[in-house]
Length: 141
Image 1 (cartoon, one colour):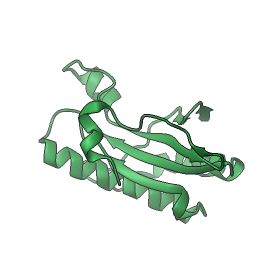
Image 2 (image 1 turned 30 degrees about the vertical axis):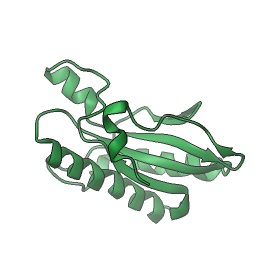
Image 3 (image 1 turned 180 degrees about the vertical axis):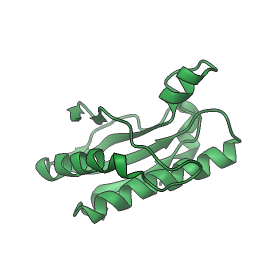
Image 4 (image 1 turned 135 degrees about the vertical axis):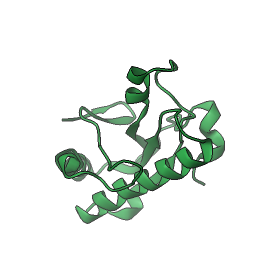
């Protein structure tokens, strides 16, 4: 359910949240458990950015706040599963980095997501582009 692909930890199932909330639904606990197991099994991964992304159907401010809260919620869930907090950071990019630019239900479903970008390994920075150009001003410092 989890694959490491170059500079990403790719989840094969979505992490779901309660509507208009950062509360992770119980059905998503197994995928959170799998991400935690992947991080435990790969101690060379030194820093992962947990990213929240939204669809376009709310205001920019609302989407940024919601995605920041959701990414932080995922970080907390991983910390509760014994992943060191200093290996994780969270960021919310709202609707600024869509993977599907269309304006329909299929695109909205794809664009609502959590991603895991490997920012640093024990060997140093990975050089991964963490955010799309429209989201760079939202990147954590």
